[in-house]
Image (cartoon, rainbow over all chains, first blue to last red; front, top):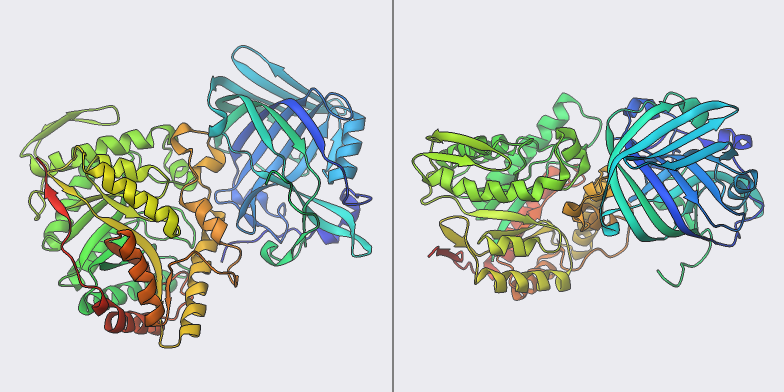
Length: 256
Length: 367
């Protein structure tokens, strides 16, 4: 049967974000500009990055995304994330390895409301006539310098974003414990472009992905979307196969 | 109603040199029995890099072995990937003609374009152009088979005048099909006068609509070959057992395993934003059905597992919907022991097949 990840997140719970509860309200995030680069990575370089409950995608790939949120409950911010393409049961998911937000307030709220492993840093989303660029600095050091080169218009219906899974501690059944949390934003597309991914600089260790090597670029997109961060609906046991260890903690939204 | 076998050739880990050989040998033993029992077709996919799910990357070789071991059953490519990075069209024409000769005119040629990034990316193919290259290939193949000499200038490939050899045994050429998974591909098949080789496990409602649309459109088709191959085939799982409960249980295990094996593969749409892959295709459909390898939930309706009476009811429903041929997946990751696969085939042939009288293939000469 399909391969499984090897990461046991219960062995190092202190390294995970901790949520005071699983009851966060949703955030509306209108007119976000979202650059997403998909890049294949050698399978061997993902060893130890994916939780035991999940399956790797074949071939292995990562999603580098830099998103400018002009309007949010904590004001404008820009967020850069690294996710590992994977599977929760049968479903494609991006497992969140690391994230950097451009404001302290955004980093704190994303960490404690949804369990994203976010730190604050300098995150820039820049648009030029022939490319969209994203740069991330932490403590003065560049940890990501990437671009979507030669963007060409495509239809929003051509673009598929997969849901997120993050590892965090959260209270459940009377105890705060490590778990996997699914975050499944919705997207309404206003503008979509496709181009070539280009990564000039990438510090894997700074993204909690020590050993990860970028290989073949797949494709990049940049879209303007109305999106959200919804209430948490599903949590998963980090050690059991997801099809056995998923718990619904809240009913689906009315639009599903 | 015609019945066939459909091979993905899924092979469980750990892969020793014996596991792959054993599974291939099991498949050949099944095909030999199916030939003796009166099954009509054996189809083999072309897939690459799809770990466990399908180790059938050289179907022309497997089908040649099938042809040599059998006397009557037809052998089918289900499908040949018509993308230049995978297969050069000259080689497709040559290989299929050779297989048609070796099988004594028993070849069916399914065509398609691949649906996974796992495969397209592996060959460095451009997902944006696979539909176009498929269209070029299927228009060229009949000419390459039939014309004494052939030359071509196209968008995806070209060649100066040469004689492509050998020529197929069947005249004017073998029947052609197209893999139908994504909604709308049945129309592509119909417009070109090709058979509809259904590879999805959709329920009755969705299949009925596809079949009606296909039948309607093919009436005014412009066939790419010398004749119209108006046939609708669908794919199913088969496990036939005297005990209904056991038959259903094992059939579900087979189906769940097959569906769950699709989990790790990357559908093109998941990673590569392209107008050429807007619909979800087969993998997401399998994933929707794959709640787990041992799930107990009811699978898609119309599955051919259980006791003979239950299977007869399912097949009759497919027949009522207008399906001409059902192709069966017999195993996935060897979860069904080989002796039980063989017993299932025998029981199906004894109790189910006689209920369904064969009707001649609906093949019309092109005007």
